[in-house]
Structure formats: structure tokens, C-alpha cells
Length: 19
Image: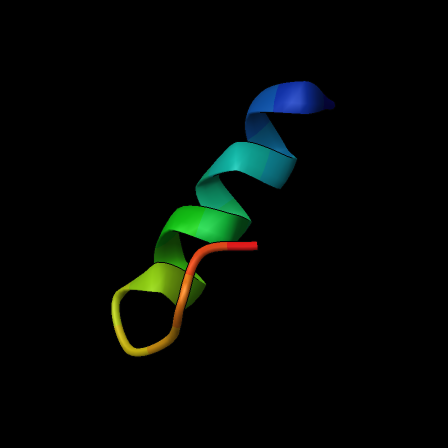
């Protein structure tokens, strides 16, 4: 799912740079 990928990257962004 596209939203799943977006949510995952957003979660990572919390403590890392966005992909």
C-alpha cells in the first residue's frame, strides 16, 4: 500500500532524515 510506505517513512523521519 502506498499509504503504508508513507507512514513508514514518516515514522523514520521522526528520528532520521526523510528518504
